[in-house]
Length: 245
Ligand code: OAD
Image (cartoon, rainbow, N blue to C red):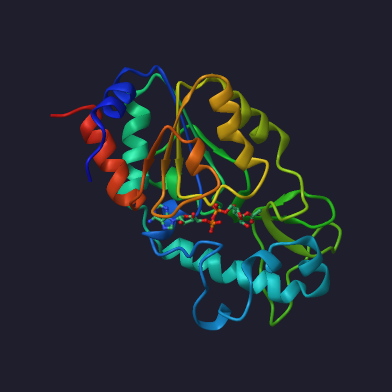
């Protein structure tokens, strides 16, 4: 993977770098993206239709089971070279923020520290009525587990379509986007708002926008650099080009 020299130099000099990641950064860890076809048992379901409050109201068991399947898959997955390169990058840049739409926790497992999780984390569940985080739960038979306090159903602590993002996380993401000199946009279809608005905030504040994605997105035309290859190849190459040994 050849990295443009001008980009490598800009990264090496930058005081402030932000990164926005999506499901594509975890694809090489074996975690399916949202807009790729699903396989096996779940092939008949559209993830975008499972990740809604309405789907949970209509069929809580189906939605709970889908997340339980993803939780297991994520627990077995390992961070890949792309996740690891972002953790290395954090150690080289004085002001660094990693904003992710992913709920899989793989960035932290790869060693990233300043991670802003916009869409929650699949490892946690919460009470669907009170929103309180529930650390331990047991599944009995075929039932969706219930909150020990109020008896309402438990649900994953992730943001669904039609729900608002955690305000603190969104604020931190917007601040990082407006402050950074370079924004890397990695493995996201750049279609889901408000995350998809972050590159425009960064660009209007003067940042250089770098898209890393094997496929075109609505952001591609506005990006200053487009690196059309998998994140697991591009990100290590980018770090190596910026700080050659
Ligand atoms: P998508 O599934 O929409 O998009 C994944 C993107 O990753 C696509 O643009 C692919 O081309 C790209 N991609 C695939 N393999 C890649 C690789 N190896 N390296 C780099 N890029 C690769 O996932 P997101 O953009 O994350 O929200 O989706 C955004 C949100 O929509 C998700 O957080 C989720 C979903 O519905 C909620 O659940 C609220």
